[in-house]
Image (cartoon, rainbow, N blue to C red; front, side):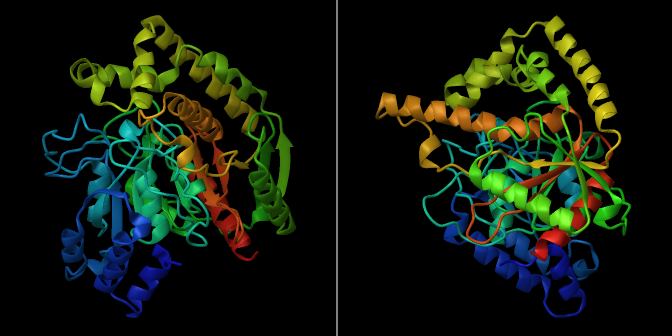
Length: 456
């Protein structure tokens, strides 16, 4: 399996490898069949030149491969965000802050990664540019039919899982980092949204959008967050037994597919055997979200406000599954939007009070394993009944994939997804999460959990 960032950096410092040699390995993966449809634009020559730059090995990312989701500005390039309607957009005048911080840390950008059009889905499909197939970053190629990679940071996840990048810069509005992390057997960390600037990124929801990243390990997630947030994570040597953990039973555990239920149960048992104190809590506030978001939620209203001129000019070039959800935002009244803002703040206060006695909560990242690509393929117009069936399945799957993760976004919280499946199993993610600004505790607990699971 591909090496993680932390191991590679230590090998560089010991003179056991070089940045150009590591770039050659990354680009070999990027050119392989496993990365078909991962990149919307490749920057291989630029990445090779960057990796060979003298002195770069002294920087945290040391000229190693990093991919960038297609919605972030890169100086001199258009930012299509997985769409056709922005394909001819003017080039960005400068890097987005997230890209600039990665570059300053020594990142060599290997390309822009494919994504769900305008980031509006957790499934990962894109009818314009194709969909990369899921890849297990823990155990390698998945057997059987091609499966969805999760979205919206689909290409970013597969680039990391296959070894084409050490870091996949992406975004998370309702789960777009954690869902593909879970379905591709890697790590995704959604930091508290305010900690990393989202300037220079095409928005989905200005309220919920989070700039964050996918990595192969929690150790790598800590370093990447420090770079993106320009802050130090306070490390704790405390063992698992020192942390107060809880499993919320309301909603998060409903209707788990057998593979997910088995992996989650086995993981909790392993953590308890390692000394973890894990209680269960009801968290009834989760049931209130349906009523709070009954008028459509933030993503529809805020994306419609941004897309309205484009829709008026070029609506037919949108993915119909995306356009339908954006256009729902047109029906939200101003008072309903203000009510939503206020209801969210009351709900956050209530949840924070309920979970204030624990250091982190544990849940399955998503309740299902990755469905096949064929079952949710975009309509092709050849068979109306089949197209309708696949659309219905797409929206059913999308709702399930977003169910657990989106709760954390509404909470303005932070969450880590790390793989907890075994060899021969489809990838399953464990989500470690809490409210806003508990990032350091979530990451430290994630480190201890990762250490425990690696011994299994």
